[in-house]
Every structure is written in C-alpha cells, then in structure tokens.
Amino acid sequence: NAGVTQTPKFQVLKTGQSMTLQCAQDMNHNSMYWYRQDPGMGLRLIYYSASEGTTDKGEVPNGYNVSRLNKREFSLRLESAAPSQTSVYFCASRGGGDEQFFGPGTRLTVL
Amino acid sequence: GNSVTQMEGPVTLSEEAFLTINCTYTATGYPSLFWYVQYPGEGLQLLLKATKADDKGSNKGFEATYRKETTSFHLEKGSVQVSDSAVYFCALGTDSWGKLQFGAGTQVVVTP
Image 1 (tube, rainbow over the protein chains, first blue to last red):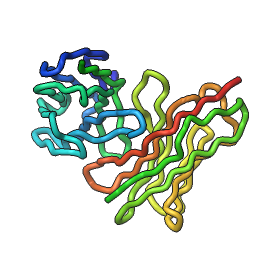
Image 2 (cartoon, each protein chain N blue to C red):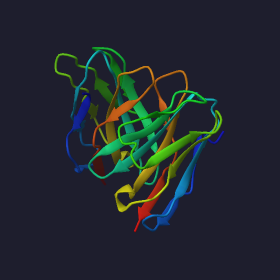
Image 3 (tube, rainbow over the protein chains, first blue to last red):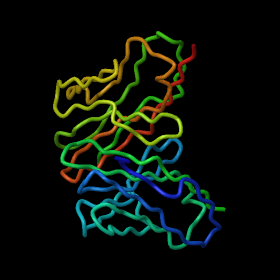
Image 4 (cartoon, each protein chain N blue to C red):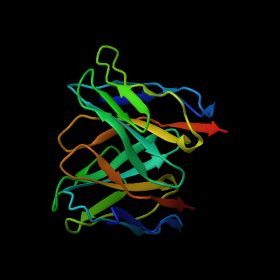
C-alpha cells in the first residue's frame, strides 16, 4: 500500500516549457487535491477533484490545468512555465473522513 | 473570507522543553480544525484534529483544544524531543469538498 505517489521528485524547466506532474493514490479515495507550497505562505490549493470526472478551481489556479484520468490518478499540467511557478507541489487525497493524505512532493524550479 | 494565522518561526527549543504554537482563525460557520506536521523532505501528515467547539485533539503527546470564543487552536506539547523537529501547519476546513485553508507554517527546531 504505497498511499499517494508523485512523479517526478525534482524538475528543472526553462521559462515557456511545459510539463505534467503525476499523482496516483491506491486508497480508493474519491477526492484529490493539488497544492503548492511557498515559503511563508503555507500550502495553497491549486485545483481539486471531488470525484472521478469532476475538477474545480482552488485558490491559485492560473497557469495550471488538471486532469482526473480515473479514480486513482490526478495530474497537474503547466502549459507554459513561468519563474513564479517555482515551488514545491503536493498532491493529496481524501476518503470518507476529514483527513487528507499527502504525497512526498515535487520540487519544481523554473529558470 | 477564511484565514489562518500562525506564530512565525523558527521556534528553537531544548529537548524536554514545553512547546506552544499559537493558531487563530477567521471563518464563517463551524469549521473543523487540524494540525498537520511536515518532517524534513516529506509530505504533510495529520497530527490531530477537532471538529467542534471545546473538542480536544491529541496525538503523540501533542494536544490542541478548539476554542470558539477566542477562535484559536493552539498546539502544545509538554516535553519535546529532537524527533519533533519539523514544520507544523494549522489548517481549517469549512466545506463538504474537504478543502483546507492552511496557515503559513511554524518551523520547530529541537536541540539536544
């Protein structure tokens, strides 16, 4: 039981490049979330998916798109990366209770 | 809107010292309150939670009480260990979609 997995762990991009961050969970959870973590700002919600087939914007969605591919997988895409998107990205999932389970994170640097 | 305010860190303590991390919130309705912990190089994990006023959450020697009158959820531990060195996040949840609003986080450093 791996919980929430994220790939890649680290990534360096040049401004304007695109990439997709992958997230998968094996806990049969309905809800999944993408956050970014920046120093002094805590975690901010980018997008979430309450169930398979639905997605919705969070607090900071600009510059990102998401896909809920199936119940297990929820990907985050940067179409044209900008230095302001340098951050640590966390995926999380939630089942029937309150607790969110977090992946180990992806550290992204945009030059 | 909803917001969470935590005391700024880093907080540096000696082993066996008493730890308090202040957290206050602003929210409409009746939020659930959480403390998450992030150990170095890892994702966040739930430390404790409280879902209604006067509830006390506890785990691993940490405690926090949901105080509606002061809109606070302060985290305490009576005797910290080096292994408690981490970043602690206070968070509130207000909707059925499970979305969380996080505070900025407080880094705690415990020295031997």
